[in-house]
Amino acid sequence: MSTISAIVTGAPAWVWAVLALIIYLGMRALKPGSGSPARFSVVPGIFLTTALGTLLLSSRLSDILPFWLASCLLGIGIGVFWTQLLRIDIDRTEGIIRLPGTAFWLVTGLMVFGMRYAIEVYLAFNRNLAQEPFWFALPYAVMGLGTGMSAGWWATLMTRYLRAAEA
Image (cartoon, rainbow, N blue to C red; front, top):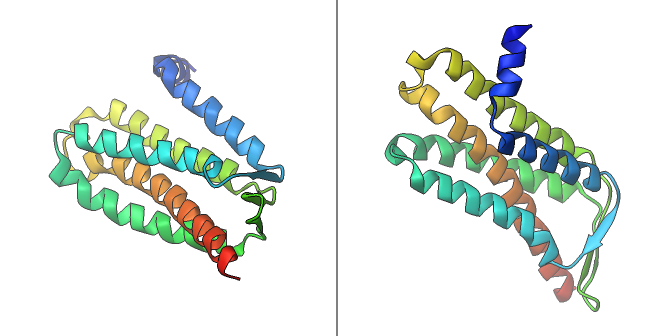
């Protein structure tokens, strides 16, 4: 039990704040919602800005960039596919997008957080692996997947919004 306690108490407070934010946003997404395109751009914008900042601050950008890009492309595909399945109501006169409630973001957010957290814990217990290219790049690949899903969702949502004006 002391190992589990050490894992939980050893994480910085901001990690638990991120988890709380993921749960909060995921719970909000369970209910139908509406908003402007700008409102639906905030969270994907934060994800992208954070991801790019983290990448640029890495001392091994050339090692991690291929992993991040590949997983980001996969994430974009998932985000696009998911958003195309959603029944979205668009009111261009009022500038409003109405989305159905979905568990997708709660489940996905918890999965991505869990993967990233588990990898970091594993690397903390196996410090010798942390410098190997695969293990060094793996947390960035998970970040790329989440960023890509968010970007794919946003791009498809905005495309559908803009096309609604043409119809």
